Image 1: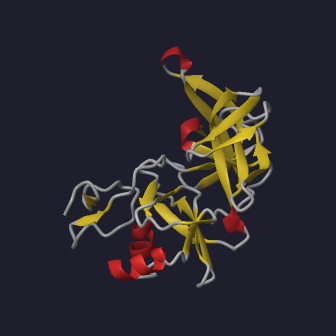
Image 2: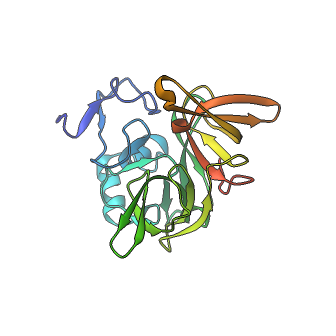
Image 3: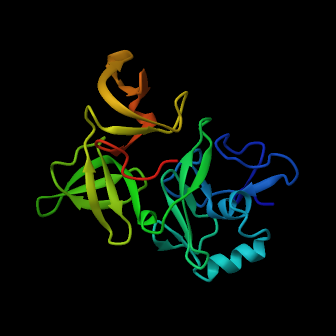
Length: 236
């Protein structure tokens, strides 16, 4: 079994909800922009989480037939990494799912509508000036689009994957709704109340959040904006 294409189940990230016993190996994601901790190969989602198919042959037939879409795109790579907020659609089955995390920070899927499967939240991680005085926006999933100067690093957008365009803009500011995907408050939606900085040279950026009567703090790199006054997508 090639270690280039598989990893030991015991050594797989703890965010993967897979059986650690029995078969020794599990598929490894194809190279991409998604981190190993916050994504799993499409084949693992199909066989071990959704249980749509059991054998490698069945999965190959489903994928090669173009019956599976990720973020509105037909995917024929069985090891394509599907990560946080990505959507998986089986049009023949009429089923659509979104990748989130549970309270322990482990990856999971929730069922969503066909319409919602065409929208994903993307965090802006880079802005670059390109020829013609235009601004190129880089997102956390590796996608890029031409944007406007109003978009700031740390903001998020709701992206229409069918039309390939930005649907709405969510500013990283007080009052915005954030989804925490790692740490003690994983799988929590809370409202941003403010910001602070800690550590050497105050480089660790912290968000102060509230949910009901509870107030807590989370590093900015462990949250993702999902709406301005309320979440714009289903999160449970």
